[in-house]
Image 1 (tube, rainbow, N blue to C red):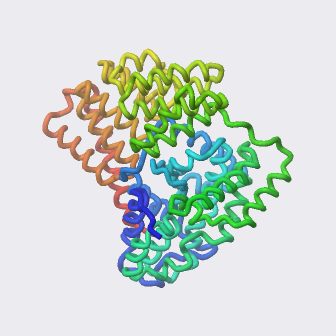
Image 2 (cartoon, helix red, strand yellow):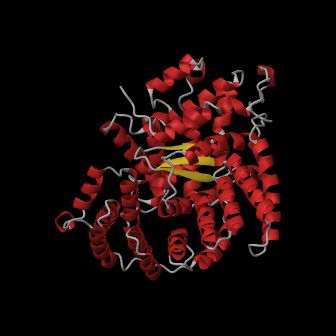
Image 3 (tube, rainbow, N blue to C red):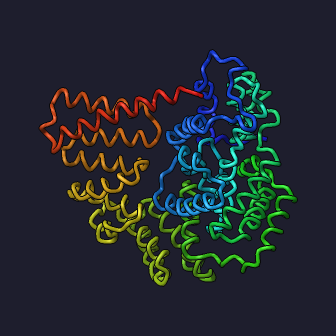
Length: 506
């Protein structure tokens, strides 16, 4: 059987096979970190290992920073983290040292995976099959529990006498099991077969532990207990219908009858009402994930056809909203802006009574206007002062294009002050500064965008470019240039230290 290797997995392979670089090449087996109970890899070392993998994911063409979907996922993720703190699953040290970031991939594969150091990978294909935030919370809660229980570190403990190269192969196996016979063959050729054997998946005990703790976290966060069981059933059904490699979550997280029955029993013990019907918001979010994860011409045409009056006539309002949203977004991707506007016009009155859904429809209308080159229309549709990140991105782009870069810069400066890991916001800020001929500030913002994506080497290059500019032209051309130059010097030293730490393992 042949499995397709997507770009996300190639990035994982490149990153994890480079894991030995995190270890001193002079270490002997006896010098490897003690990874047993009470002597696990330090949280700092685990964070650096996760950063190495995450950096490759950020560079990969499959990485997507979609403000609408990222905001939706982040809302769920934030609630789960808060619940894990309340339950004591998230220790203060872990809370402080780990990243706790979800990285989205645009592939339509149904997949999610935990990485060391608090990073999670989530493919749009998984978002595209859920019918409620509760179902996605069950998956994220499970993966969060793999991290809080330090399962990757504990897997390493089982193989603590391996060379670092073999440990790297073991992690890759845990993340991308059965993705490709060729990839597996390459590992075997490299002497890594021992690491792969028996380590392609988290152990069943670890899976049960992640189920149990993840269930507690998601219910503590206020999500419906039944969602865990319904998501399991949905994934199990998907595996029965398709065995072409498109469901790697089922391969790295094997679902047993025992695990499904356990979640069903737990849900029955909680006297709660059934899961709510599909909401307008969820239908639109699911539609967005479906279109963005499958941008082929045939899929886009099918989405448009599915939004026709004949196709939507017998649908529930939520299903209609999803179909119209998908059709409008697909039309926009095909640059048929007239058709996209017509579909948004049909969608808007349908969702008018639901504030959250109406916001999504309005953002889609603004997105269509932006894609059509109508920046003034974007600003007419979206309030630049609105607190949401999708509004921030759209209005910042529109303000820069319409000669209001100063307004955009002021809003973005406030945003990155509280959200310094938002690489897209930093990049927009760089564009706003460039539009005002504030080159020094633009270069620093570009450097901060690289820092946010963990590419410290690239960030150092940009900070040094800023220093070179100061040496050549001085700081008099820009407002507060001397202050900016001082910030650049300080940030360069800080990032140089981070770059050195990337090569260390305690």
